[in-house]
Length: 316
Image (cartoon, rainbow, N blue to C red):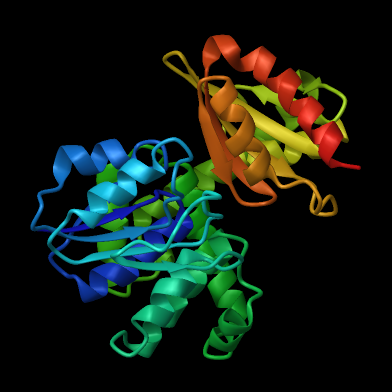
């Protein structure tokens, strides 16, 4: 069997669509850094062929994940753009990695000799969704299209996906449609969800002002009622702090999206979270200025205080 394991955000969906053009009969499975290892164990057989896209290697489980993938006799292709664990070494399977670019850019470049040129716009959708559309290569792809059209279509895709969090069958349908070169604006359900999400997000932005909590260096909000990533950005703006955190609860786990003001380049969210989350029984990481974390709900307050202190140490 052929598999595409990918993240469920815009970059992950766009990258999976590009992979689906090449691996037409592959089954798409949506996962995340903390769940990847367990999802591989539960679904993959030793002779399967795998493409893994836009999934950071979890600090606690990355060795187990790499060892499992190294045991696969079929083809393994891993493409990602998140910072790597400190002790990571190049594995035996094919591992394409570069920070500062989107996974959609990486996979489009990898398959550029077999992908029709019109699929460059799918790569652009992913890059826009990942805030990574200012690289030299992506700028060269913009020369093939009207940038305003790309932004319009990417905006619909981003907003529609934000409104479709755990709707995995719908996301698989989107991957197939994008792989068939359909525009997001042609997908009626996606457009409806995008419009609804824009309204929800604006209402969320207004409510954040009234429900924000502030520490010295970070602000946070609990259950913002919309996109956690967007909420985290509004939180640091309204809280006038270095870092903004949006939290939602799933069972006994606090799931967080974390954003940092761009100018504080000395504060590496990925490194701080990989270090501190383990101390509180969780996991975390991502990019320098945009990351995520999962912590047992009972440890959330202690984690926030400790994280605030780590930010204070790093800012000087």
